[in-house]
Length: 206
Image (cartoon, rainbow, N blue to C red):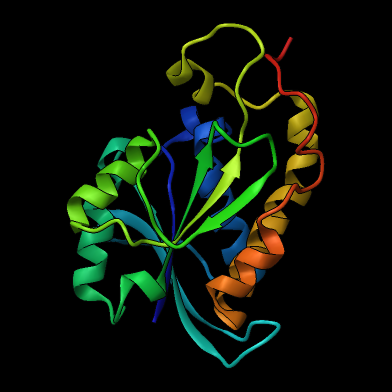
C-alpha cells in the first residue's frame, strides 16, 4: 500500500493559508481519483482507493490529512503506519507540504533529508525516528518586506496567487501520479523544475 500524507492545520481558520498547501495537494489528488476523505481515523481525515496511474499497475493508495495542529502531524502518521499495510515508508510514503524557501509554485521532490525548519515535517521525522521519508515540497515563497515567517505562512495567498493555484496544485497532483506509476526518481526528473509562474516575485498581498 502507498500512503500520501498532506500536512496542514485543521479548521476553516487555516483552510486557505499558505501553510495548508499540503492539504490542498492531497485533496486535489484524492478528488481526481474519487477517494473521499470522509473517514475519521488515526486522528486524521482518511480515504483509500485503488488507483491506476497513467503509467504502471493498479495501486492501493491511502490519503491522510492529520487533524492535530501542524507541529503534531507525526502522531497521526505514526498511528496510521502502525495499522496500515505500508511496507516501507522510504518507498511507499509521500508527504506533501509547503516550503518558504522555494519560489511560489515551484515543486521539489526529495527522497529524504532534514525538515528545513518545517515543524510538521520535523515532528513526523521525530515520531518515526527516520528522515528517509519522500516528500513533495510546494513553494510558497518569502515576502519581499520584513515579516515573521510564522505569520507569513498563516496568511492567505495573494489574489493573483490564488488564481494561479488550481493549475499549480494540479501539477503537484500530477507529480504524485508520476511517483505512483513510475517511481520517485522519474517523478523527480520531471517535476523538480519551475512550474507555472514560479519565477515571479512573491510579495505581501495588498
